[in-house]
Image 1 (tube, rainbow, N blue to C red):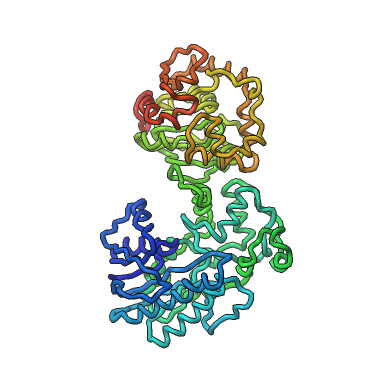
Image 2: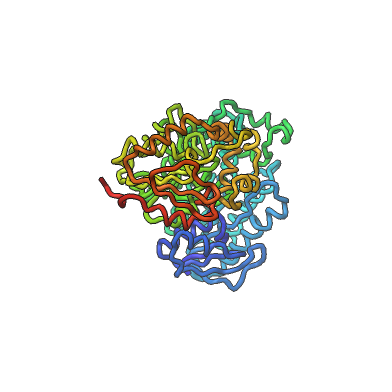
Length: 561
């Protein structure tokens, strides 16, 4: 093989395998359990040059495919590990990989992935007071260097900082999650705390190039332009539309305070320093290979989008592409095609754009599906929802079918009436202004406190829909600060607004189709086609997506006019 990668199912290892395969290399991937092949399949990778090998590096290695380049990306990365548990993979396993590599007659390079805080070119660092993970990585760094010299193994050590990208949910990601959930009143460290980053794509490309360079190098791979931690968090906060903390707590104070009070893991505190690192050789090598890091701020924003889309590792993104964009002053969560959609989908309450995922899989052409302002993952705006929708539609160059659900039908109807040349048709799914008003108990909207506490299972029962990822997504958003309160307010019945919407429906100048469930019928007669889906309630896109997709053909096909 051209290369063999140990730890091939890990965050770094799997991306390295993908990069090597993209370059046409023949790769052996060493795994304990093959989760790599399905991961590569979801990315459309050609795996003809891949061989999956099962092995346990905590035991001496034998019988593996020979390779020219050997990469050790295997590590046990977690805080709170026991000493022996950490050493089994990080120290003993690393030495087993090295000793096996020493037997290869055609070995060009062993690339060992260490860490920016533990690598010490001048010998073993003082590991007093370190947690089991960091201590084991520091011990391994020194042991691998010494053993490689004894055996004459051509070695290169790569010392990455915090590696960010899709699928990275530990370390710095915990700060971002607390920020997103409103649980980060202060930052640990000080104004000059330096927690450098490097993107997974860049690091995988760097590793793929390493065997072409000289042996014996020790590369610190990180972005020197990473902003100090308070500015880093502020960059992410501005992007995702939440408040950044203004206070910092010195690390020395955190060490003295009880963990039950601070919530800070003692093992993470050594990473919160103002230290800088010797990156000159890595930067020079990258330049010679034509590699360039993306701007740190852009990388952080893209990663924040990935974290929110995946619910910080708790779910898979429902719709793609995704990300926060500015719409009418709201940091709006937008999924799909912003410029040439065939359908624009506006969700009802108490849901978000993920509501449309079952339907989206059945519709032809690109879609545009945002979270409404102040709801779901979107930030608030001081402008009206009508102004927000007009701004959302501003970049759209097609004439899409505008599909709205429940309370979103009013804004969609007003947009279609004001801009008949911008849409080819209007589909109103379970339009609230044409259906029975809520009971007297619910007329003022369910209590925000009840919505905030509602589990996904209870929410599904309340809505009369099956439990699933879409309901899980909505329940997660209802636990965000302010969302439940805004949903409760939006659910209040506005009788006057309903009358205006009914009157406007008679004057709208685009083709209109209304779709309702048989258990949630209209209570007012209309002069537009009405489709009733048997057995469906208020959320046919969740319970009957195939039938709803069949009835979305309204107006002419989208065009560029």
